[in-house]
Image 1 (cartoon, rainbow, N blue to C red):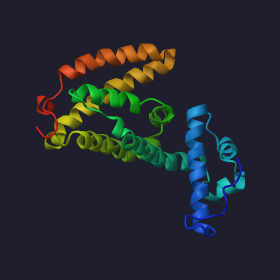
Image 2 (cartoon, rainbow, N blue to C red):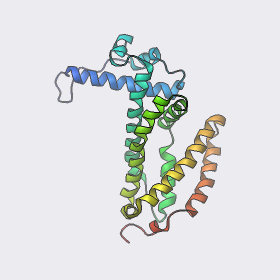
Image 3 (cartoon, helix red, strand yellow):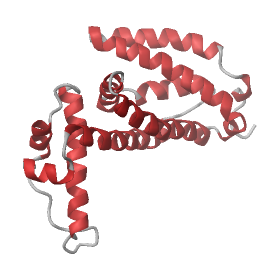
Image 4 (cartoon, rainbow, N blue to C red):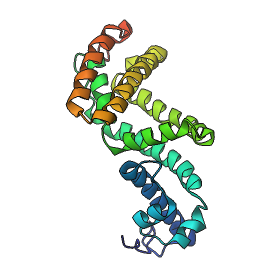
Length: 216
């Protein structure tokens, strides 16, 4: 990896603060990439520095230990997950069945590397209470984005946001359990079938207040 050009957002030379922020971001992105590729236990400071294309000295200037980088990466990962929620919202087409579309949307949001990195941190948090505390702080960022996305697609849902939240969180509990189990056998098709089966049950428990389309 090559160094980033020494050019700031305004087109001039970057300030020291801008260079520092860029280096920090590279390290956090490298931490997330390392979690995805190698898992939490194999995420080491030398490996992170190598992925980031930085020297160990540059790394140590920003983060003294793996734990410091992981804690900082937790917030960045949550922000990336929340951004993914909003980036995908335009693909959320409720049509005539809001809840089926919402469940499809949740499935798509949980595909890909960001969720895998998140699971690595969740599992590590079981025995690391500091890590668990940091995760607990940032999870509401993602949850708030999910509810906001659903309300954006169907504004009428905002009138009963608690019921919507209960449905979304119950669906995510089921979905995440299915996906974590699928990490063992690696059978993506089986995981999808299990999710489709769960969706049939979840839809029957959907709050009736959302049956009417937006503007009705």
